[in-house]
Length: 337
Image 1 (tube, helix red, strand yellow):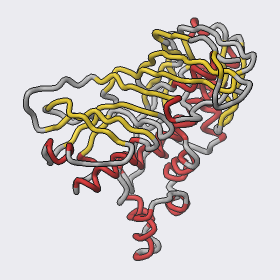
Image 2 (cartoon, one colour):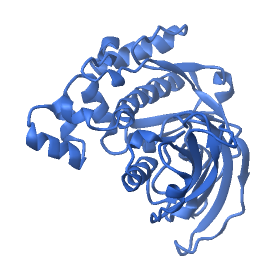
Image 3 (tube, one colour):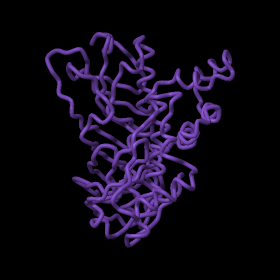
Image 4 (tube, rainbow, N blue to C red):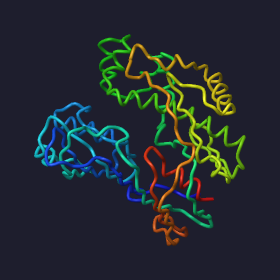
């Protein structure tokens, strides 16, 4: 079986930003290069060292811990020199320019990936231009889906019990039954991440069921939330969009997709009204459409070479570009067999 991310340098992600630098502005833009930290952890550390709130640091997309990543972030309320004087292990910051707006989630065109796949023997590697747009493990982590499910069902005590945050525990030591209050001390984008993870899980289930019904199944690959289905006749779905279920979700035109969604919601004992969370309004998330198929640009597959980390095995370097919100690990799962 092939191996990914044996070294952080095996998985390089370079963000393609949309922001443009200006000579002056309220916000500072910096390139952040990091490894062995995910974006939220890096932002938390930066905010603590600069004595600012985490929300004063903006970023376009959350990047994985087990990788070398480069992305644009924004600061407000501090000086350029304060950032440049920081010394943080495994994080490099380079000034890019000023801007009039903060960097927000989604403010990117896509990402470039340079991936080393290891532990290969006789695996075949397929060249593709399209891939199924599933969410992958980085979205779900260990408990994110379950926490999101509890939040939607208003099971706040159960959600809190799964969140490993010291300030949450300290809050409950003072107010043992105030689970909503404990949740509210967390950054709203962290709480939204849990609900987003559950939405993503539901989306994956919907798309996998639809492609299994309508497509020519090529293979199925297991992951923590079940399995993803890859099909050989993907081009016929290139214009198809499936909703991330949320408040205000409207029935889709494709009756078969709607039937699958209805069945999954029944299994989950879920209603659209559950996505309204009055106790924490920031978590009331609307549904939105997501493409089932995305393009894979500039795919390059290198020649297999000796794998110094796995004696007797081979490695190969693969690079490509994906639109924002898509997962390079899914491309690897698709092309290697």
